Length: 136
Image (tube, rainbow, N blue to C red; front, side, top):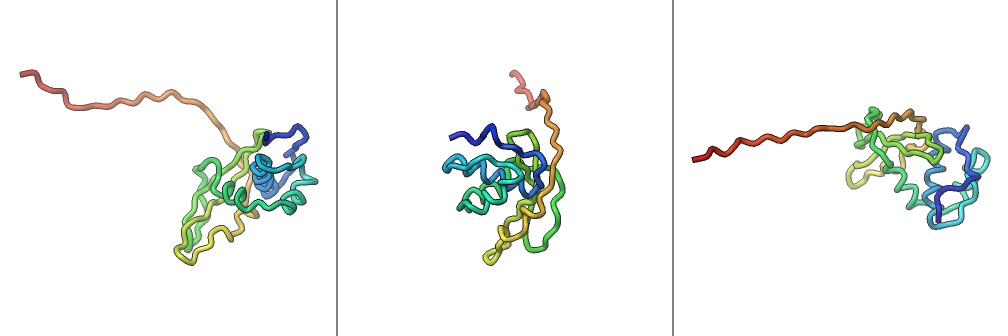
């Protein structure tokens, strides 16, 4: 099943709504999720059982170099996901915390933010050197 519908419209969504949309898009692969837009995203998100997809999205699609906030109890890095319209949203992926840690309970969705992403392809030359064998 396709994760894109022509009736989806992500314009005007808050960062939190965009993260919810990412969860719904991943859920669409296994369930029938109707068009996602600013009027439907919150209601659709609340209507489905999506814990597995939510955890998958929480880990992020791409690790970014945006500095994450500090929390003495958990490790973190900033991650982002891209929506089908080309827009990006970012959030902090919290992890660790030991045996009693519950990083998934932190308000990562509420603290999501819009991301400007620039992608460019670069050609890279890699040189590897080794000492030459001396002929006898």
